[in-house]
Length: 385
Image (tube, rainbow, N blue to C red; front, top):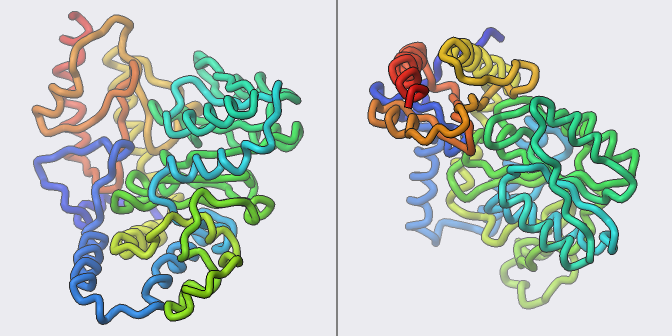
């Protein structure tokens, strides 16, 4: 399939808005919006809902995730947030930690990854080690810090502030070599670039859905490796028990969970949000994740070339992900390029010292030109401040 042309007709993005900030919150597909509205209407008539309705959407999402990301449907749990999934992983892995063990995270990691493992390390007398930011290559820096004391490494699939590439294949091999568990927050890449789940085989993969999966806010997914699927879940949901579909028999409390990773589902998984997530996964399947990644890489390459000409520091292509990247501002700069672009209806974000660019397939040539025109007007003035 050729690179995707702009898919703006599938979104409700006005012509006068140039939105390059999907790494913060993606626009919702029109198809997802329509299914959410239909689901809300169905909640107005609860007498039409039957017990199978409480489970069918969740099972559809598991199946689609296995098709798009890898693994088997039984390995997926539905979670309300990345923090829920990471906290689940930390709770399961905490008993494996001992005094003197190390848990690795990277500098500037998203707080939802750090906080659960900070608590787990403190509870067990282990040490949370932060790997300093390298000048260029995160993978080399992470591998250099691996050792026999490392029992867990928890990190994002790319750096959330700037899209810096992290080679999870190499890191997964290093984890296997020393017997460390690998926990991946895939929120900033799953759905926008390929993820070799079967090859990387992380112990836990978590992804909030409201960014690159195009889900409505409040739905995410977690894949749990088979060796951990008998572990204690974060909560004891009745919907995770093997007799949950028999509402009349719920007073016969079951000690058995549903198979696979379903015990790790967040409570009230049968929400009216799930149809919107299904529509998003179906559309991503129609586009193809490889095609999404290549199409976004083409847009970002055009932006990056202009930024380099304006004097901003842009990572080399091999060290950035295809769908998002950060351009570093000069030290000491205290202006508000993000705010000035917003006044022109051009939307990017700033994370740390980097301007972050994260388009999705709704972006068209006119959006790119409006962004570049704004940067050409504003950046030289900003650099003189």
